Image 1 (cartoon, helix red, strand yellow):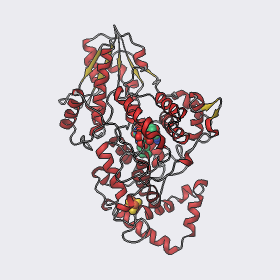
Image 2 (cartoon, rainbow, N blue to C red):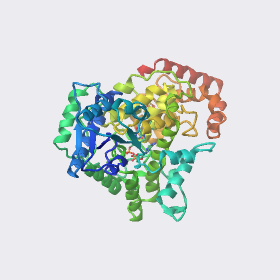
Image 3 (spheres, rainbow, N blue to C red):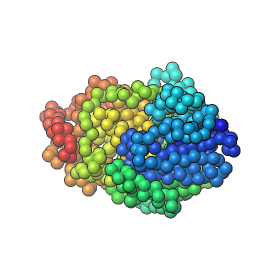
Length: 509
Ligand SMILES: Cc1cc2nc3c(=O)[nH]c(=O)nc-3n(C[C@H](O)[C@H](O)[C@H](O)COP(=O)(O)OP(=O)(O)OC[C@H]3O[C@@H](n4cnc5c(N)ncnc54)[C@H](O)[C@@H]3O)c2cc1C
Ligand code: SF4
C-alpha cells in the first residue's frame, strides 16, 4: 500500500502524487498541524482559508472514491509536525512508500528529502509539481549561461510554450508587452464592480470558530473573511473577474484609492496558490474574453503576463537560488521593522490604508505591496529577513516560493539585481500621482524638507545618495543621479537633515 501526503497548497485533483495512487488500495493523508500553522504568525484569514479549503478538498476526494485520512488541528499539540501525523498513521497502516508532490518551500522540502525517510522508516518519493507551466529543470536550463535573467525574455518563452495570445510564432497585436498603456490613475470612473460574497457552510463556520479560538493573537481579523474555499467558489471568483473587471484591469492596474480595497484586481492568487484554480485555465479564460471582444488586449496581455510571466519567473528564481537567496542582504540593511507594520498605527495615510486593507482582508494589491509598504521598507533600509517575514505572515496568498523573491528581490533589491534591473524606490510624487492617499494625509506631499513634509520624499533621496556606489552606473538610474547632482548643496543638506531625523524617529511617523 502507498500513501500520498497532500499539503494545504496542493488542493488539485490533477496533483502528480494522486496520479500515482490506486484509489481502491492506497491512502491519501491530509493534516492540519501546529508547526506549519505557527512557524510564522500567519494572518487569521490565511489559516482559516487553508484549513477550510483542505477540509472541503478531503470531502471531494472521498466523494470521488478516495480513502482519505484527515487529521484536524489538535489544540493540545501545537508543536505537532507533518511527519508526526505520518508516523501515527504508519503505526496503524502498513505502507511501503510515501509519495508527495514537491512542496513550495525549501525548508520543508529539505526535511522531506533529508530526514523523513529515516524518521518514517520507508522510502519517500517526491514528484515534480506539474501544475506549474515551467518546471524547475526547464527554468534552470533557460537561465543557464545567461549574463542577466530578465522576466520579459522568460515570459516570451512561456507565451510560445503555451500558445497564449500568439499568432503562429508572433504575439497578437504585434507586441509582446502592453505595459506602457497600463499606468492610469483612477478618478472614480468607471465604477468598480463589487466582488462576489461567498456563502459559507458548516465546514467553513467550524474552521472560523477554531481559528478565532486558537489563533486570536495572530495578525488580522476574521470579520471580513471572503475567500473561496472550494473549487466552485474559486471558479465563481474567476468568472466574476473575467466578466466584470478584466476589461479595466490593464488601465488601472497600478492605481490606488483610499476607499477601494480591491480596485479591478482579480483576487485569484489565494485560489491559484492553494490549487483550487490552475494557471493555464485562468489565462485561457482571459484570452477567450479578448477573443470574444469582452476585454481589450492591453488588459488581457497584462493579466496573462502576471501569471505565466511573473508568477512562473519568481518560482524559477526561488528554486534556482535557494537556500542562499534567503540570506542575501545586498544593500547591507540593518534597521528593525517599525512596529506599525504589525499595529497599523501610523500618520502616513498611504501606509495606514495599506495596513488596514492587509489586516481587514489579508490582501493588498501588487502596487500597494511594492510601492507603498515595500518602497518604505526599501528606502528606510529595513533588514530583509524582517520584512520578508512580515509579507509571508500577513497575506492570504503568501507562500515562501512566491513571497520571498517578490520581497527580497523585487522590493528590497537585496539580491543585487538578479530579479529586477533597478530598485523600485519612489518618492511621494509617485504615490500622489497614482492614488488619492495624500488628500487624506497630515504630511505634505509637495514638500521634502519642512517639518511636516512627506517622509517618502527626503527618505527617497537619502536612499539614492547612500547607495550611489551601487546604482550610479545603472543606466536605468542615470537620470535620477543627474537630478541629484544638479541639486544645490543647501538642498542636499536640508534633505539629509530631514531624512536623518525621520530615520531616528522611524517608529513615530
Ligand atoms: C512584496 C511583495 C510580496 C508579494 N507576495 C506574494 C505572495 O506571497 N503570493 C502571491 O501570490 N503574490 C505575491 N505578490 C505578487 C502580487 O502582489 C500578488 O500576486 C497579487 O497582489 C495578488 O492579488 P490578485 O490575485 O488580485 O492579483 P492580480 O493583480 O489580479 O494579478 C493576477 C495574478 O497574477 C499573479 N501575479 C501578479 N504579480 C505577481 C508577482 N509579482 N509574483 C507572482 N505572481 C504574481 C498572481 O497569481 C495574481 O493572482 C507579492 C508582491 C510583492 C510586491
Ligand atoms: S503625503 Fe506622503 S506619507 Fe502622506 S499619503 Fe502622500 S505619500 Fe503617503
